[in-house]
Image (tube, rainbow, N blue to C red; front, side, top):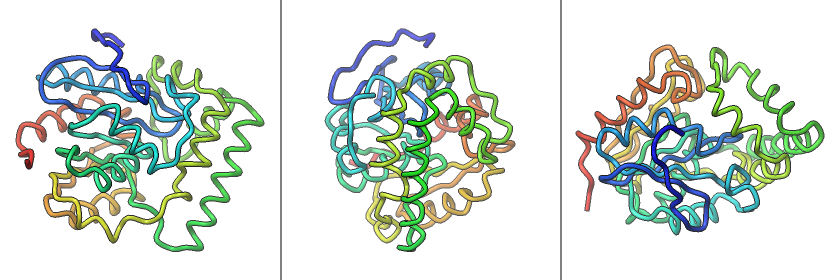
Length: 262
């Protein structure tokens, strides 16, 4: 990371840089805190203290094992009161955090995130698929799995940053497998019926080409008390990796105009 980062300390691996109101960035599956650097550093330069966190099974938290609710506990203990920005898995973590600890989530940004699978049968099928994927990671190793993972249509057009990929390759197969088995989408009880409880400003973001998650993001924004949806042009699921400048500008502008509710 190019900025002057320092360890935050706490239950999860985390680093911080900058000064001002705190903004916490939470990464997606197979990623690490380094994945957020291009966006987080631009937000820090705009007058914010930014914190990037490694989720259980990833990065500096590789040996931590936790389900979604326990991850929310650990995140709350590590980063405290802040605006939270979560992508995919990180978005699901931040959604749990906002429902469990609304007093510390000043604002919430969800990028390519879902409140869960409503249908019991479909959710059970997803859990079976996630368990099989976890077995695959252990079988072939992290680097080979990343090649398969990034080849999915979901990430079409994404050219990963070399530093991001280097950090991802350091993730252990056991850590990634545990993340899927404990915190995969199939393990998550659906939260759609609880979205109305969120009373902080919520920004939902999806790449314009992410046809699965655009309607999900639109629905979340329409359901919460103070929601806004933005589509990122010429981007798929990992909009913050494909268009970091666009997403950073979007975040900075929204942080300047959205009021923190006390």
